[in-house]
Image (cartoon, rainbow, N blue to C red; front, top):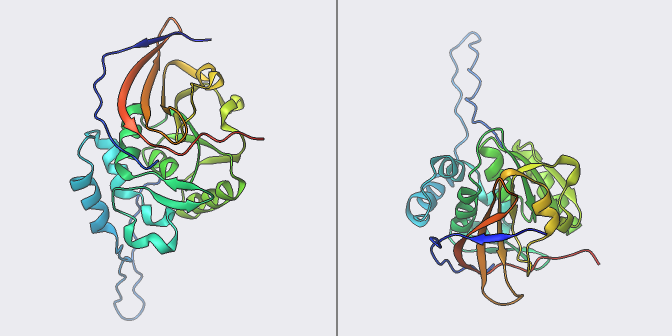
Length: 250
């Protein structure tokens, strides 16, 4: 088992109802007989995405995280019925009793991981695939596990279609993904009532674990744990949150 040392709390309370794809320039047009031009397809949600980051996400100042949030098309990860709300700062249902987290929480948890290009991150709870896409956009090597088979398949297909190289698997995330350990960071997007020991065991020295912990159906606490040189977890309270329960295999 691990020991936990609680650091001074510094996060903000946030209520919640709950790697890299570089942009490429369009290929130059070819002139045949007469001069022709090509026009890059427009993104009707670009302004909404910019406003989401610049106006709604005010508690995060990591530029790498913010650049990814400005780039990843969140609307591709929400059901068609909710496209008009894709860039609002609240969670949205994605079926099977699950949600896509609100953008400000995705940004907060991403920043708390303190990762960058080349780092290896394990995500527990793929959900829609949006959090994995944000990390991939930052140049992170992402491994993600989803307990609900249909969501794992759908998220994997969306990530692949958008060009994000993310390793996805259907399974019980409680046990992590030992085959690819150790990880520089682990992020959990559903709330257990304790820290799963296998996830701690799969952290690299100095690695970070960002996870909501608390009872089902009640307010939980978002924690950022760091594994120190002595193998102890140093904990920082990031505030109050509300996530769906951590689901286990039957």
